[in-house]
Each structure stands twice: as C-alpha cells, then as structure tokens.
Amino acid sequence: MRCGSLALTLSVGLALLGGCAGPAEHFAERASALGFGASRVEGEGFAHVVYRPARPRPDRGRVLHVYLDGDGTPWERGGPAADPTPRDPLVLRLMALDPTPSVYLGRPCYHGLAAVPPCAPALWTDARYSEVVVESMAAAARRLLAVTGHAEIIWLGYSGGGALAMLLAARLPETAGLVTVAANLDVDGWAGLHSHSRLASSLSPARRPPLPSRIYQRHYAGGRDQVVPPGIVAGGGILPETLRVISEYDHVCCWVELWPRVLDEVERAAGGWR
Image (cartoon, rainbow, N blue to C red):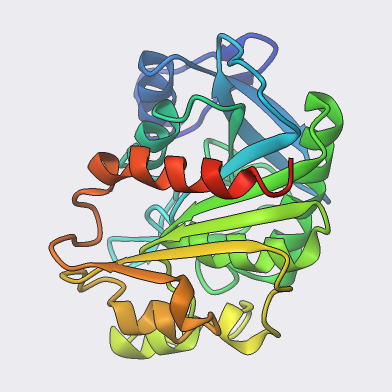
C-alpha cells in the first residue's frame, strides 16, 4: 500500500492501514484522543468524513453546531498536496470545549479521500470554495440533520472554513447562526494580499448578497493575524457590528482560550430562537 493512503472503516471509526502515517491518519489519532469518533456521510457526488463526540452530549435544543476547518495544506513542495487534511487539530480542540450537540464536517477529498474519484487537486487548490464543494457540503449537512433530528444549524468556521460557512449559511434555510474565526471572507482580497493566484474557480462571500438579518452572525479576527488580517474579514460583506477584533490574537493564538466565551454568547443568542 502506498504511503499517504488511508482505508476507512467508518462503522466504528477509522482503521489505519499501511506502513506509514500521513496527515489524515494523524488527524484521526488526535480526534480519537479528544474523544471523537469518525463516520461518513454522503454529499452531492462526494463522501465526507465526519467527527462527533463518541459519547452523546446532552441535547438542550433543536440546534446542531457544525464545525468547518481551514484549508489545511493545499500545496506542498511546489505542487498540489497529496493529502490536504489539516495538520493542526485546532478546530477539534474548539469542538471539544463545546457542551452542545456538535459535529465536525470534513470537506470533499480531505481526511484520506483525496484519491477517491471524482476527487482532483483542483478541489483543494483553485476550486476549494467552488460550487461543487459547497453543494456537496450542503447536501451532507442536510443528511446530518436528518440523522440527528435537529432542525437548525449554527455554523462555526475557522479560516477557510469560515468562508465556506458563509457560503453554506446562504444556501441552507435551516441556518440559525454563524460564527467565523480568522476567516478569509474576501477571497480575492486575501489571494492578492499574499500574491497568490486568484482562486478563479471558487466562490467568495464578498461577491455574494448579504445574509438574511434573521441569521445570528459573529465574526472574530486577530489584530496580529498576518494570514487573514481584520481587513480581509471586514471586506467579506458583513455588517461592522458583527466583527470582533481581538488585538493580541493572531491566526492560531489564542482562540482556544476565547472559545468558552464565544459559546456563551452563542448560547445567549440562541435563547431567542429556541
């Protein structure tokens, strides 16, 4: 078996096969250590790996928290990465602090599925926020709601996952709220800032209509974040009053410390729709 490949046995979790461990395997190990089990949900043309607490959490309402991770590693050694799965389990650590029913929804082709047709490198590089990615994630989220019995979603997206959260919130009427952290909501502005090629096959929240006012929104940015500066977040078509800039934070530090307060604010807002 080739290094970097991953076999999934998703009735009980991930079965790691082969003689070497790649990013997907390391991510699965970290998820297990945090008390999460793996499963698989079908989207629209793609499969999605899902992590959720191995022990069910108390269900205090009709809302499911859906966590979306960053872009991981789209490029490696001058070309598309063989496995774009995130190397940093930051979003898992955030979800571990969440006492409400929550699920981590993986992107198409991530978490060991990069070699499964119809996956292709464009789906984690130029087309990482494309129509096919968003539509498949929307279909997967609807299936998750059907399985869990929840009626509404609060999206919690980090970095590129925040951009996807904005795009998905506009697509699913089940959306009740949205929280983004260090999110490149102006995709074109972010690419230009870093002299990257424009993600021409991707959608951008900055080019979409504003979300309905009924959706709770909170967008967090780090004042020291050089990956996604606050101006990129602000340029994503959001209302100024929904933006919170934490002056001493950067792209990674120190969102875990802040997260209980973020969840408390979401919980207080949720009282209005439960």
